[in-house]
Amino acid sequence: MHLAHLRLRDFRNYARLDVDFGPGFHLVLGDNAQGKTNVLEAIYLLATLRSFRGVGGAQMVRHGARGYFVGGRLVASTEHQLKMFWSAGEKKLSLDDQPVKRLTDYYGRMRCVVFCTEDLQLVKGTGRIRRRFIDLLLAQTPGNYLTTLQRYLSALQSRNALLKKPDPDPAVIGPFTQELITAGNQLMQGRHELVPRLSALARLAYRRISNDAEELRITYAPSVKGDFSVELAQSAARERMMRVTMVGPHRDELHLLLNDKPAAQYASEGQKRSLAIALKMAQAEYLTGLTGTPPILLIDDVMGELDARRRAGLMPLLERAEHARGQVFMTCTQENWPRELGRRLRRWQVHQAVLTAGPETQPA
Ligand SMILES: Nc1ncnc2c1ncn2[C@@H]1O[C@H](COP(=O)(O)OP(=O)(O)O)[C@@H](O)[C@H]1O
Ligand SMILES: [Mg+2]
Image 1 (cartoon, rainbow, N blue to C red):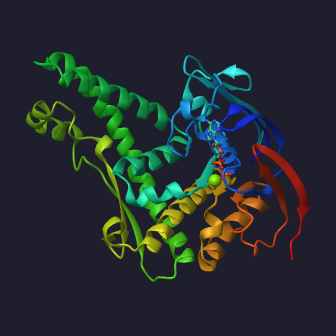
Image 2: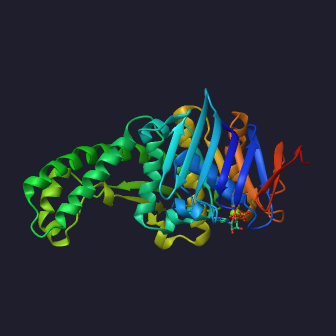
Image 3: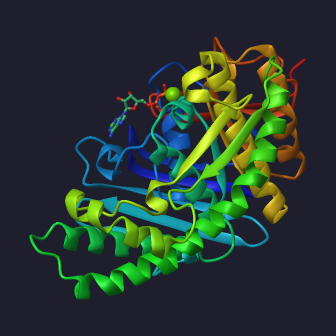
């Protein structure tokens, strides 16, 4: 799978950009604050409808403009045109020039995995960030996880709104509780199935990039230990007091353990860093295994900051993506680009939101 064309209008510092990309390895070079990460952000946005910087639409609109447009031509087993427009008053999303009615029709077609400095939050941040990580992965998996998640969140929202009322009527809450349980059980099942597989992949990845002998293990810690409906009923008193739904997959956790100790508390900075990268490598491996084609890899700045061992550990993933006619985009400043990348690569130079193709090189 590769992104053959990217079109930006009023996105971040790009007034306009039209660029063709072949499959293979793309090295995006430039000084700081020129627009390297913005290109990766746009590609990721097209795939996931989210910024990996965790910001909303307004911040991505070029200063002074009304809205942004991001479009792409994706070449996979078939070709697809992806287009999105965002402004405060209007949002449009189309696939092959048909408006997208259900997100499930859009999601999973273009698959991207990003490696960026924000990844450290997977280890250090709140459970919400880890839930979002597995939700995104499950949403990109064939099946109806995303629809179920939307049903769950909507039932949860209605339920919480009713619980906020002075004297909540159980008869009114009932149907939302039912929906919450049905959808919630499906979400938990999806997470139960995913996490052990992800854990195995992440353990291998961690071994490859880490100097330590620690064993990485990821476990799923659902908020519901047994029967959702029973535990929900048992939480009724607490629920009335707190005026919010106290148990359910919205409170699930993913435990990241190094030698069975929680990484967030006990791991060194370097280990946390390796762990975050291992999670992303596992994500890429999982998606590849699922569909037979590697996702587009977006590597923002991190390569230049990694030591030789971690870089070497990441290399097989990049090579496989390339061999399968996948695509890798990697940003670096001139100073920190890892010169041992002895591979055929297309260099791009970014200067003040202008992307210029360099020669295709075969560095020594
Ligand atoms: N909404 C926006 N409108 C215009 N310029 C923006 C916007 N958001 C960020 N920028 C500009 O984009 C540049 C940073 O781009 P980025 O891709 O992060 O740089 P880098 O090349 O260092 O990765 C900065 O000059 C910043 O001012
Ligand atoms: Mg950057």
